Image (cartoon, rainbow, N blue to C red; front, side):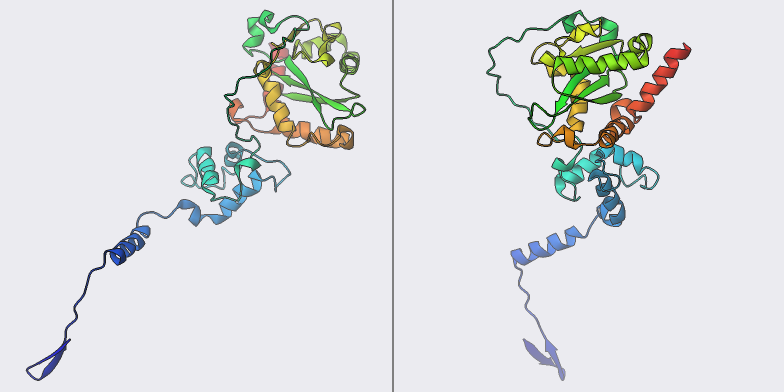
Amino acid sequence: MQKKANGKEYRYYNEQYYAEVGQIRYESNKSQCGRKPIYWSFPEIVAKLDSLLLGKVDGIKYSPYVTTQKLEEVIPTEFISCERTIYTWIDKGIMQTKKVDLMSKTTRKNDHKSSKTSIKRVLGRSINERPAYIDSRSEIGHFEIDTVVGKKDSMDNILMVLTDRLSRYTMIFRIKDKSSGSVNKKLEELKSSMGEKAFYQTFKSLTSDNGLEFSRLQEVHSNTYYATPYTPSERGSNENVIRIIRRFIHKSTAISSYTDDYIQFVEDAINDYPQKLLGGYSAESIYLYNEVFSLTS
């Protein structure tokens, strides 16, 4: 609208308010308020975290805890307060890494009750008879033992895995097959090469499940205990290690297709891996420290 006054021409505008337009303008202005997400300022560090989590650096997929330890010197203190931050970014899709890519995958509880009705007998001395000092993980030398099978083939090799209860230090051996004879043969070879005294100093006790491959374990080691049937949690350290081994050695692949060097690589990777449970130290460093301590005490 235009009006003239005193020889001058004036223009007048009649503005109308639209709630929808006002809301859009408000949301646009609000989005520019406050501190920007900190990962926007450090995209190169996010990329480094992804590289470690996805195993692009050395072939090993590290946990969020370990990645923060490894990048501690290059990550600004205000960037990440703890590994929980990384889990949050993964959940929100900010990183390339997904939950399925993590070294230890997320699990969901199954509330469905087992339909097993058969009772599996304990092959020997029950874990309930195991002394309290072994249960307390107060010294090294008390190992949990199990086997890892590759492709389902009776002619294929398998892996025998021993995990120290205190340090989580792990030894992996290739054996001929999943039979008690092959398990005992490997343990006898260790006893022969180490000497009986050193063998019993290293392996003070063994705890296994009730698989038939361990049915004659007492013939090789006198201090042997058997877990309660269908209770893998009683050998939790060994079970956790096997879960990690499965990230390297898959069920669908024959064990015989893996070289001895690769199996050694897997063992080294597990033992050199910094663990939150161990205060950021590796299983090997804890095991060696306690071994030296036991020799000098």
